[in-house]
Image (cartoon, rainbow, N blue to C red; front, side):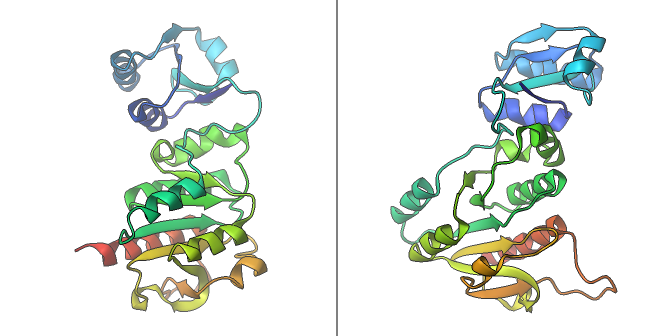
Length: 247
């Protein structure tokens, strides 16, 4: 079973309307009581439990914990997963619609993953594409780090990112890789259908995906350290893409 323990993570999961529960309650301070009220109003089942028992189930709890899965394996971090095929089919029905997609090439740190999803929610990313399912034991970290944004950001798990890039291109997307030596992001036209690839924390974008990029973009940097954290870089790139789209 998987449990969310962060206040924001629990609150946003309940608000999203996606299946969850019960909400385990051991002790409730003012903030936890607000969430208990929210759960009751949304017909989420409550279960009273002892502090010691809750610590054994969800060590990072603040007096409450929300069950989001009864699966022993797999992933239920709370994200509204969709297929790339359905996403592109919807776009085909709206030929003039712009879209912003983020591709994650093996982001391994769940804190980075969660922080990126928070940025995606803030800057209106239409879809996040990744290759590997996040390990179920990291679901709570991802949800808490994303401040609950994981419950709102659409994600697609793809076995072959290179093939996904080809599918995006056929649907009219321009695909840009994030790279320190790329073109200044502020000088690039990011209107229309755009996908941005963020590489892994250690190795960057893999060779196979780099070969399929239409170009590379970079965050202007004036410091002495050679690069930004991947989640920070993603936030800056997505902000600029969204800024250009404001009419």
